Length: 154
Length: 154
Length: 78
Length: 78
Image 1 (cartoon, helix red, strand yellow):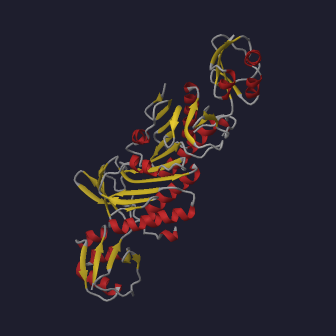
Image 2: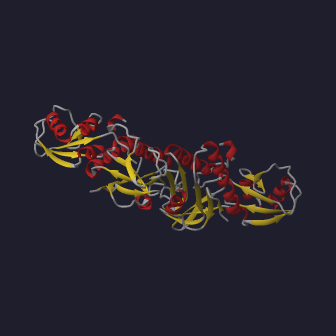
Image 3: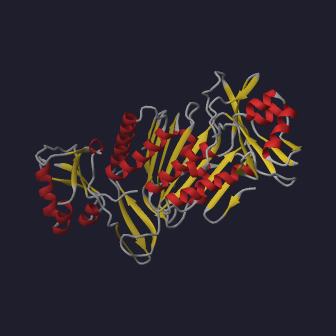
């Protein structure tokens, strides 16, 4: 299901994420900078419970297509960047494990930082994804929900 | 030689760097964001040669002390951040290998991005480090040299 | 007739992720959805975006058996 | 007398990384360095910072046998 080219690697799947795999893949001989963002599940809850895990639900196809749009928009804004990888995990993710990883390489670090931050900010606003908080004896949708935004409207 | 506490991990050594080690170490249950910067040696030269490797020289003791000052300053500016790790490699580093890695965790991603970028920008300006370009049949100091700046003056 | 994809709270309220629904326009399909799944689903739908084949759709857009109508409630990703 | 640490281009110009140098102040130590290592070292020193025991020093600062005087040319790290 994943979208893979020489420069773009987008994946939404139930497999555990490896930040190292993405960062190593993003290295290019002409790119001296790789910036990686790793979003891990954390203990703070929107519903007041002691969270054990999070469960992410989406359509892998729709989510990957939207993430690919995010990558394309990042390339419009920062044409210098080299490789971009964005992986999002779905299904059950235990506390402290990565739920989303972004890696961007660039000849210089400023563009890599800016593009990586744009990518994760825009993924959070534009990609269909629903997070369920799981605690001992119960679960509920996260109460942080926001309307979906189009990538062109960011 | 390295400086290690529950929240800070500074190291300057000839050992190969592992971005994954730093990023994994920086994960905290209350920190949902880990931003990692990896500076790899790249083929573009300041002296016009086809570079095979770079060689970094410093005093490990002086460099680690300065990097620890950079971390302390980042904590003044972004008190929310969790763990900060900065490792710099010395000696011969082959093309495409990491020469410096920064990892910052934080409850939210904006502070992690800002603090990580501050750390690498400030390391580059304030830490004693000399880079030699190695090509087939010769070598020379990098021509990018800049005067050392105090962390308080950044 | 169109293929239906319900996600997150929409899937939960309807009790199904995939379905096939009568209707020649997005509006007709959604009307049949509310009739089939009830008030809890209608409440989620009122806050949701509707896409056809991966793009934002208008309620008047025509749909056929090969089209996928997706209901996407407010998101909470990452 | 002080311990001397020469780094990068300063080390290269002098041909040594560590040395022991006469002098009761930073200025005297540096003067003896120039006398010992010659013009190439003097040219690097003119662009360098001088630290004593890890902190930026003034040329008039006193130094003794347990102090480390470090010569740090412009940097090119990362």
